[in-house]
Length: 288
Image 1 (cartoon, rainbow, N blue to C red):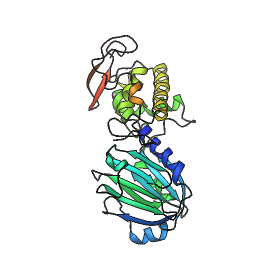
Image 2 (image 1 turned 90 degrees about the vertical axis):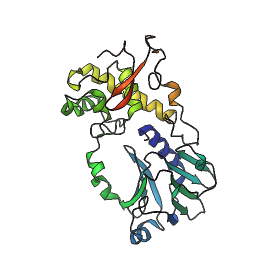
Image 3 (image 1 turned 180 degrees about the horizontal axis):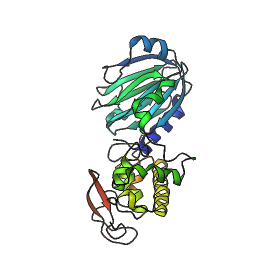
Image 4 (image 1 turned 60 degrees about the vertical axis):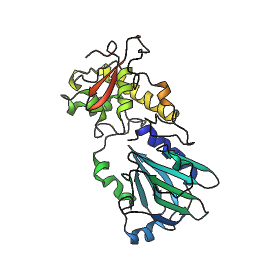
């Protein structure tokens, strides 16, 4: 599953290429990947101009001049590939990013009036592209439940700490992975930020001090901003806006570094299960 920095990398790549383009035609393979009424597609998608490309948590939002939005979830193996005068590919790294399209993994094809195309590919068919009124997007169950964006300028350390208070008896890693607490944080960036803040992932939320929450907030934002700068982590699956693998994992301090030395104290990094996920820590820096 992509994490927030990977989806933000996709968003930025699309934003630079498709805004202002008008949709001429759409093709799709199954209703599962494109669950939209043909009448809505004809009325609100065909001949619509793309006005913005946004992101909420791990969901892409392509706004249209008809005041409708394409809501896109890439799930595990989704790709967005643009072919025109410029070429862009982002998502699961397989030959579809550079091969002839459409291919057997192509679920949706948007053809623009200038002859360029945007392909939504998904090998495992878990992803989807849904057309709906822009005003209704905030009313999707997920959108109503998802927490604040951790990188928003007005999201303060105090608000960050406050979001965890209802999860006092939960371990901190489970809480930070809870999308209703904070949006878009996945396993990689949870481990990295907890290491940065010197907090053991199994500590209960109600044992975390105010100063520790401030440090965790600072570390999480720094880690995610670095990941966006580096084009994401890929976690084996994602590439950046130029179609190259993200390089954040080259800078990871603990994630997937079990058996190697901690860059802070030289102790051996270990791996175990926490919150049902493989978890990486320094047992010296992060004491339970």
